[in-house]
Image 1: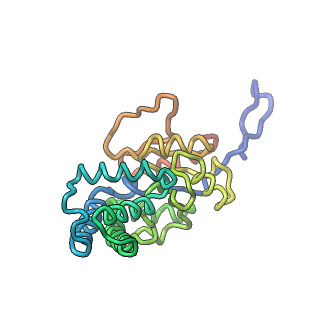
Image 2: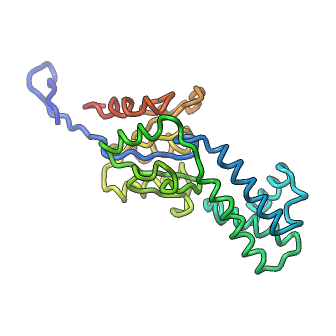
Length: 254
C-alpha cells in the first residue's frame, strides 16, 4: 500500500498496489522467428514421405498441399485447437489417398510427424531473448502460453520457465480465456499480477486483457496498432526493452 493525499489535502488515503508476480509469454514470433523452423520442418516431413511413402506427396506443391490441408480441417472441426493431431490426420489422409493400408498410414503419419517436430523445435531465439529471460526469471515466475505445438522445454529457453500450456492440451486457442485461466490457476495470483507478452494483437493482447491481465505488445516489425477499442499496457520494439517496460507497468498505482 502507499499513502496519498485525500480530497483537499485534509487527510491521507490508502491505495492498494498490485505487484507483478508472473510473466507469461507467447512463443512463435515473440521469442523467435518461427518461419525458418517451420520451413525446415515441412521439408523434413516431405523428405520422409518421399523416401518411405512414395506416391503420397510428389504430386503436391505448396498450394495444392495447402488446399488438401484445408479439406482435412473442414472434415475434422473437432481438431481445430489440436494442431499436432490435425497434422497427423493430414499425413494419414495423404497416405490413404495414395493407396496405403490403414496400418501403414498410421505408422507413416506418426513417423513423418516426428520428423517434422524434430526440426520444428530447432528454433533460433532472437539475439537478446536468453539474456532478457534470465533477467526476468530472477524477479518473476515465467510461463509459456502458445497456440502452436512448440515445447519451450525443448529449446534453449526452457530452463527459465516455471510452466507452459499449449492450446492442444487445454482444448482452446488464444484469444479464448482458457489458457489464460489455466495460468491463473497454476500460479494462484490475481489477473493484474500477470503480464502477458506476445506479438499478436488479437490472440495475445485482446485475449489476456479480457481476463484482466496486463499486456506487453512485442512489435518487432513496427506495425500499426489496429485494435481501436483496446491498447496494450506497453509496446516494445526490441526484447531488450521488455524488462524496463514491465518495471514501468509495475510502478505503484499503474
